[in-house]
Length: 54
Image 1 (cartoon, rainbow, N blue to C red):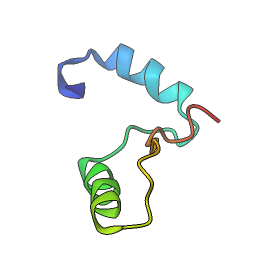
Image 2 (image 1 turned 90 degrees about the vertical axis):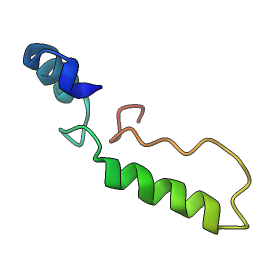
Image 3 (image 1 turned 60 degrees about the vertical axis):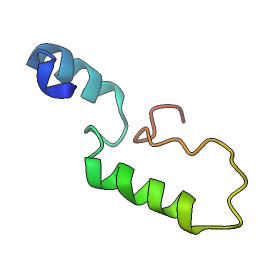
Image 4 (image 1 turned 180 degrees about the vertical axis):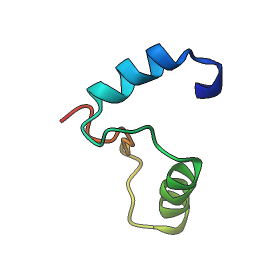
């Protein structure tokens, strides 16, 4: 999805994220693996946003 966005838009988005970058697919996969493998996870929302909503 991000590949289809103009660089100007992506730069503006990255500037708003405290981590300074978009997440990698591997990071999303790691979070999904955590949810599937952790029986104690209670179904709450796991936000992967680089600190955007802090």
